[in-house]
Image 1 (cartoon, rainbow, N blue to C red):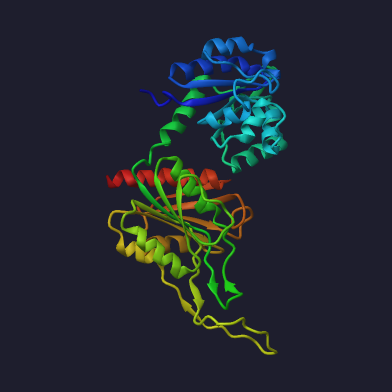
Image 2 (image 1 turned 120 degrees about the horizontal axis):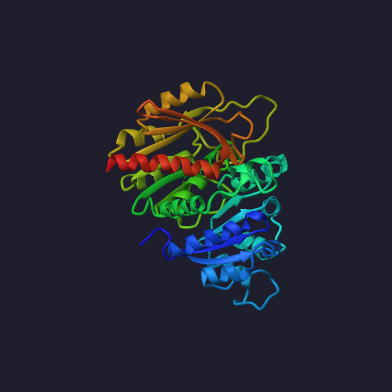
Length: 401
């Protein structure tokens, strides 16, 4: 059976001239064994009739929120049944609505309600595609995890030549197949991920900490679970919710994290250590709140255990991935850490760089490998970067096999 056999795909069709290509797309998906549920915007029906899609998919086509419902709450039913929501063509108008969270028709309402991955194939005039507003909307969607199939370059219906053509249906189907192929690419693997910062108590009120929110580690954990892995997430304090399908172990201090990680390490196939662990802690924790005095306050700090170094020393076939968050000499420090801690690869970034540090949804990293390779990745959503990291993790696991 093919990759798409039995998969439930909600196909959104919006009102652009490329809507006619969505007919072939629906046909290809159906022939590949997928159950295709088409949702059309009102404008799309001006280009292709719902009857065409109904005949192709052998399923009802939804065009309005106000028709006779097939389910108790139509948009929620579609949102819940979808394993992926594919919008092709995705017009500039639809992209803007989706980025803003507008839900004024059946398609945008379904997109807002679903937890399924969102895959968009934009199609529009070159000027509209290159407009900074559209590019900002695309960026916002990718930051939230949406995947964009870039428009093709060629002659457009308006007579101009440039980027904006809907990719050919075969290319879009290939992107959908790739998505589902990855859905089980880590099945049977046990992946240990650490995330967020640690808190080192000064007294019952105060602590030493850092600015990490845990976003990068949580994105990695979520993506690994979507690929079928058994994921254990050892997390410092954070406001983030536990990703679906992930077992979370809450810790507070570096020593707490050390104990939790070591307890899980022996049975792990890989460790992705994205946590920002404190290197030092107060030598003593005051029993009561430290009171203000007229003079200076001197704190004596002592070293915390180096979790990553110890994992490297204990490594018995596991793939070990580290992070290096630096503010200077990023490459030098990352390569030193890679060698010293016996890592398979390390993800390095300059946290002082705009939009690439703590508390943001994007990152700009360079990945260094134990075999001497290095890859520089442009600024991208942390959700997308999680996919890059896991692709390299899978390569490393395959080499171990």
